[in-house]
Amino acid sequence: MVNLKVNNEIINNINLVIFDRDGTLIDLYHYWSQMIKMRAYLISEKFFLSKDDTNRIVFEMGVDQENNCLRPEGPVGIKKREIVMQAAVDYLEAKGYKKAYEVCLDCFKDIDVQTENKLDGLIKPINGMLSLIDSLHSKSCKLAIATTDKTSRAELSMDYLKLTDKFACIIGCDAVDNPKPASDMIDYITKKLNIKKEESVMIGDAITDIKMGDNAKVKASIAVSSGITPKEQLGALTKFLIDDVSKIEVF
Image 1 (cartoon, rainbow, N blue to C red):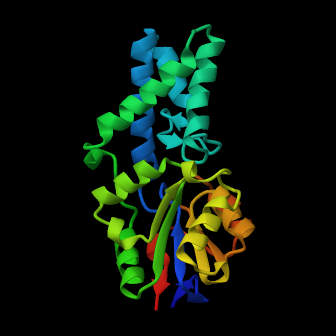
Image 2 (cartoon, helix red, strand yellow):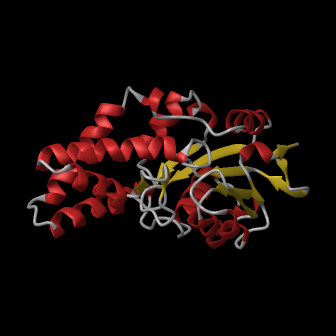
C-alpha cells in the first residue's frame, strides 16, 4: 500500500490508482486536435466538402481551432468514440449527404491504421506523469487506465511510451456497457485486479472522471486541471484539485 499527499492532505492505504488518459497522462489538445483534424480531412475528401464544412465538422467533433482548445462540452475528450463520430454524421446528414455513417466509420478506422506507427507527433506526456508512474510502480501500487478512447488505442499509446508493463489494467469504454460517469470501468478494473474500491483512487481531468469515481465509491477522486475542464467546475466536485499529476507525492 502507498499513501498519497495532495494539497497537504494525506490519502492513506492505497493499493490501486486509476488514471484517465487524455488530459491526465497525455496532453489532451495535442493529441485530439490532430486526430480530429485528420478524421475530418479524410471525411472531407470522401464528400468533396468545402473548407468551411470541413472546419465545421472539426468544431462539431469538439475542437475549437480559433482558440486552440477543445470545447468544454466535447464531445471529444469527454464522450466515447461513437458519440464523437456521430457529431460528424449528424452534420453531414443535415446537409443532405447520403451514407454519412458508413463513410465516417470507415474514415475513423482508416485514421486509426494510419497513426498506429506514427504516434511520436501525437503523444506528449503531461508534466510529472512519468515520474509519478515510476514512483507508484516502484512501491508495488497497482496502476490502471480508464479512458473514453478504444482499449486498443489506449494500449497503443502506452506501448509507445514504454509504460504498458507498469499498468495492471488498461481499458477503454468499449470494454464496458456504460461509459463515464457510470461506475462500470472502475467496477471492471477493481474486479479484475481483486482490489477493494476503498483502497482505490481515481485521477482525471473531466467532470465525468470525478463523478465516475464518486459513483464507484472509491476512497478519493483527484481532479487535475491539465485537461479540458475549468478549475472552478472541478473544485466544486472534489477537495483534491491540483494543476497536474506532478503535484501528487507518494510515500
